[in-house]
Length: 251
Image (cartoon, rainbow, N blue to C red):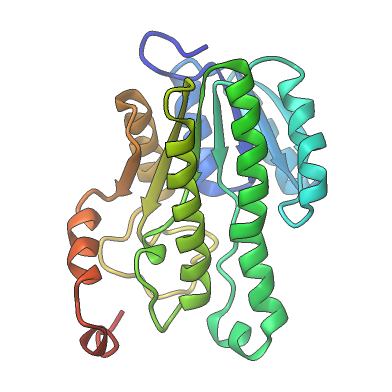
């Protein structure tokens, strides 16, 4: 169960090598989170991440999880929930893709969509049902401002995040009153390994800043968190820009 300050004592990360997820886990461990499950493909990177979190004093486990294999999600997540209650599930997996390449190779574009949307729908529903069964918990979904309005430069990635965002909002509505809290997190450009080499957009942020916003959102029981907060106003304005004008903007 969460402590008096809203800090989850147990955490399941879907996408166990995500820099944002690991920054969040480190922050929560410092605030009293004691048990962490890192779910991801069995790799050296996953084991290294687990070792680093154990060094901070947490009881850390790994579980094999593949976003592109929805048939395995019930088993993978069921293994975690069978060990005891989970206070928070952080859905943090996703891939950026390569817009120019993916436009030429539809199979690559489909992989982006299947990872970011289809895999998230499957895992999100499995996790939500488990949280509802235990009667409490938070499901935190990492979306993106890219899903707010499709841009020419990354509309494949953006469309997958738009689908994920809408799904998570609807899931939150469906679970209202059940004891399960769904929070959608919309970061802007995050300086990370995934975005290395890309030109930064205004209001760029860091994994640590996103982690801080997630912790604050949990305490406030927020439904939507923007990182940084100023993006709420920026995206509200961009949503209403006429399409012909938007098409010519350097975004």
